[in-house]
Image (cartoon, rainbow, N blue to C red; front, side, top):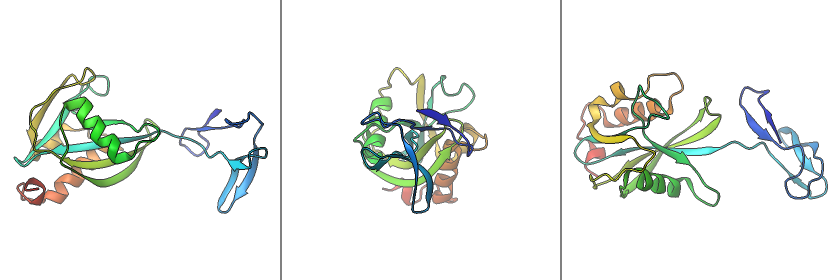
Length: 187
């Protein structure tokens, strides 16, 4: 494997077949040009990149859950996030990560966006997650967490270009409109 970032996005490109060990050749497959191909197995090996979820958790009281995770940022609050494991759907991952990091059960999830997070070279899949539970039980990877009025979220999450937390927070506030007791808070 090699890290190829010729198109600006680092990803893992196979040079040898992970199944049989044969050196891969290059084959055009439809519109995809130069795809690594195993002649022995008769299959392509597309470049790999990690996928993760990010979730904005909210409740019926007009509040959003924000985390502090110093290994991610000491300047901004974070949203719940985590890597998707093999065999797991994005929705299953979102529910699992929210439960693991905060102890909260999710009542409903809605897919909101997908975004390439260039800083980590990964695909982020963003959700809004509703819960009626307010009691937090934090994992060791979360330094602190708390419920904040939704109206404060844009002043607390990252303002950096490409921040997926920011994109999801902006989308949430847009969906709420000026009425922060909109349908999102009366699920």
